[in-house]
Image (cartoon, rainbow, N blue to C red):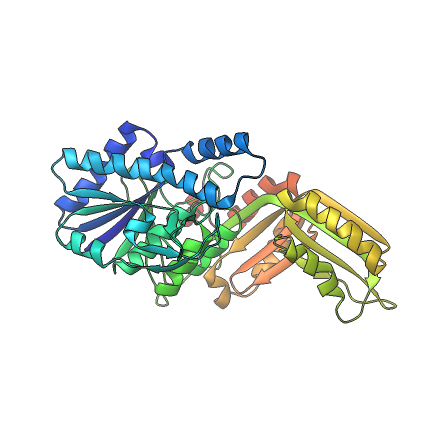
Length: 408
């Protein structure tokens, strides 16, 4: 079996943790498996390096930022390779360029264009262990590039695809994907398996266990991901294609995201091109708009309400202040105390009445729904942030996800 393992910052955060990580790698080799490893920087190291850069300059050049922060992963890769070598294991550290990661030239947010990995496959077939720096690559001009926050997950999946691995094991400080946040619902269950589609929805709603880009890449190439803990070696959660033979519950989990803000333009002229006038400048500013609701036109005017990440709220309101005057809106309102709560499940495709049940549960708890959006496997509502925990607990129980209920 050929495995690519990825270890996050907490898994390589100290020399003791690096030794524990080496134990896991050694165990797989002893079971006869071929292993390549992708590592993040030691926990806190990337933030330390960024802080140094911003002490030097208020606006450091992105090329130099990438050149500097990429060193964090090189330290952890070299240390892990050294530890494996002390055990008699042939291990070698590779930075992104040496590992064959080719990217475009979008510094601090580069995208992988190719992984030239034949030399790594040859080492794996000799049961040597390539230890590869995550999060980075090299562009056509030879510049060091980085993939953005969480990019080591994407590096690991891309490497697994390139070396034709059987699975990509993502080791982190949690032991799998839960039906909801266990900090809110103590009876949340760890899922043995989740589909790529469901995982994408969880990731997009702020579940920071896996980076969205890594899941998209894994789904495109059908690369199974095993999310598991490096602190407790128990089976985790497999992220894979949907098993069509399995009868699925309507809902797999309940997710939420507090990082939300809502903006409303009142009584704007309703004519072709008005939405482009509103959202064009927002897109140009690099701000992601999520939920959009436009009211039915009355007397040639309409209202548009939309959500953006809370971190972009002030900038978006500034942009909208100018737009609202230009297009003749009667008022501009903003609210940065909202949140999203979603029910997610591929079983929705074959179960009717999920939306009705969700709305009834929230109404019974006195939770007012401000906005609604749906997809084939997700229903999301925007509510007042102060009701998030109440809503999550109520929905988790109502859809039979509590541990005691699921066991019966």
